[in-house]
Image 1: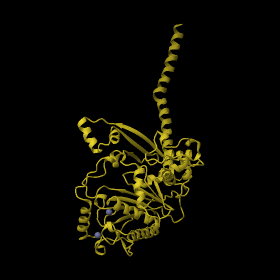
Image 2: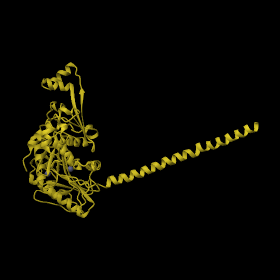
Image 3: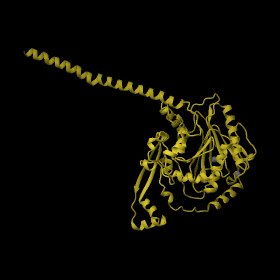
Length: 464
Ligand SMILES: [Zn+2]
Ligand SMILES: [Zn+2]
């Protein structure tokens, strides 16, 4: 009996011992090994996916400038032409019975496929003395004052590019402070003063040239940038100094030279395929020289990050909707154009579309999408700049022109349209910067609704 008990104790001891060894040493190893294997597999997968994502663009359906839906039907059955943006309160934006029509459903699904929109009300209370000041600012208009107490904020986010804008139309109603020095005076003085000793006016002696030599035509010339920001980087200038007197012929000559330069560089180095033109106007717009000058670069592998992120958004959009038969012909840029057409925020010039983006970065932010880079396109750009100068008295701006990738072997995957964007850069003589942590680090804040901005810019254009 005692022996039996002793034997079973030994049995338990031995079993316990082995169990202990197993739990403390082998089990964790097994466990770690399996998670490690799993992680390794995931990392491999992620790598494969990343490489695939970055390098391989698909062949998207081409960008065309006509809408993919019936605009007349849309206006007849679906859309109430009003200035606010569609919000949760769909009923005040779309016509009664809109759900009965396919065109309404189709276009609304296009809108929702890219944009996320919402309205919030921000409530404010003012102590009496401050309230008097506010009433005075709004010229004792009772409706406006009521709006100041309950401010409408419109948020729009592009779900693919994450461009994000908040509109507060009330902020746009605040009185504008007139600049410290009158605009015209500042402009005349600055242009006059800088023209006396301008390297770019005296370009034969005072500008650098790159390995391709100097390019020149009637009104424009090229020069190498003395301090480059890319391997292939050149500048294109009109021969005269005053940006306010820039003629269409000069702008055309500048773009023509730049286009020639892109072709020549690409012939020398076929991996350089991504043409970019950057144009800042006047010191307040970030230009280092008052003499008008456009930077041209040809990058390899991909566009600069800000545009590549849009191009890649376009690829993701294409992949997500590849199997949905009816959907917007799956070209991201065309869908964006469709949506802006539906909201009546576009001007069409057969092959060229001017639009006020619903994710604007500033008031009068304008995007131009085009099928081709040609003289008509340059005319549209010229009219926009004239609108900035003559209608807005806006002389400083930043703008970019991304041309479709150059490809020797007809490789048209990831083919972006001709893409131009121009953004005002504040009053030229103001000490105040128009850019803040909002623009640089968080969300764009615009104080006029897109429809109001559109109503202004539509008057700038003549038929081309
Ligand atoms: Zn000059
Ligand atoms: Zn510059």
